[in-house]
Amino acid sequence: MEANKQALAALVTREIGKPAGEALGEVQEIIDTCDFFLGEGRRLYGQTVPSEMPDKQLFTFRVPVGVAAVITPATSRSRCRPGTLVPRAAVAGTPWLWKPAEYAAASARALAELAWRAGVPAGVLNLVFADGPATYDGLEQALASGVVDKVGFTGSSAVGARIGELCGRHLQSPCLELGWQEPDGGHPGRRAGPGRGGRACSPGTARPGSAVTSLGSVIVHADVHDEFVAGSTAALRVARIGDPTQDVLYGPLLDEKFADGFEKVLGWITTTTGRWARRRSVGSPPRRLGTASWVTRRPAVLPPVVLDGSATRR
Image 1 (spheres, helix red, strand yellow):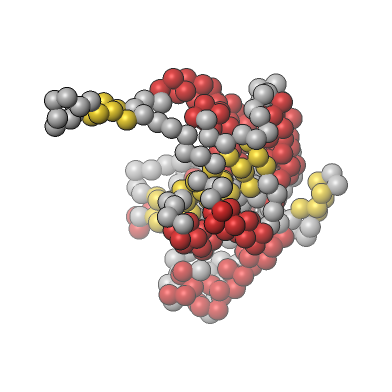
Image 2 (cartoon, one colour; image 1 turned 135 degrees about the vertical axis):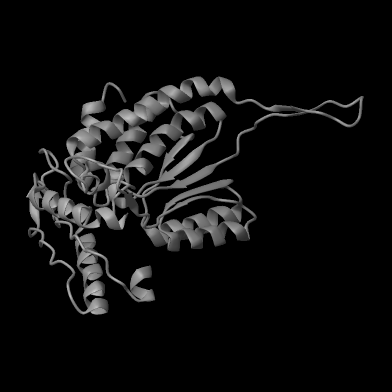
């Protein structure tokens, strides 16, 4: 991965639209984590347990969990995770199959290819491409036939609930990392960037679908609310958004359906409140990056609105 760092980062940028600098950092995260687990292989410790019987010695030791099935979305931590699971699985003796998101299929193939060429047997790391329904059906069959011993899923709570229920029917406890809209916070003692509101415009929280840290809402102390909203709005108005190969705040959306979803959310707010809290800056029409089309949307800054229950949940 070190030898192919630049090429991997360029592929991530091209495939999912992540700004080049962040894509390079993502690949470096994989490399750093692999280095860490090189040493962790010597620390797969068991335990010596006190026994109530003087002639008995009790201890535990670790064994491979069996075949693990891992399903990941296109967000950065989830793309990094398979790259770091390869050394962990190899050290622990656990074969696994990886079903990446359709949006990150090329990046997944590149990571798997590097692992295979580095000596990881194809039977230890298995790459599967499938859509959502086919993945669920395949997982159901694998669990029923007993060929999968552990399931990991990162994605929406709705899909996670179905996978959790499916695994429960086969007395398995899956590893689920499910999505949620977690707000950031702003208080009088906090400053981020030039003036309050800077964090709302930082690359780490402005990634539209290419990371798990995209900022959707902020809870701000009343004493700094007006300054925070003004600072965020001013910064976002001039932020460069678009071509991820350039110096931009964030690149294009993963797919045009996410742009449609953005408009739908604003529609819910319009319907519920009867007004726009602040009219959004409409994104540009689909454009092209090399041979690939891409679409952007500028973020909308909305001051506090009281929504009914259904709109809030949405």
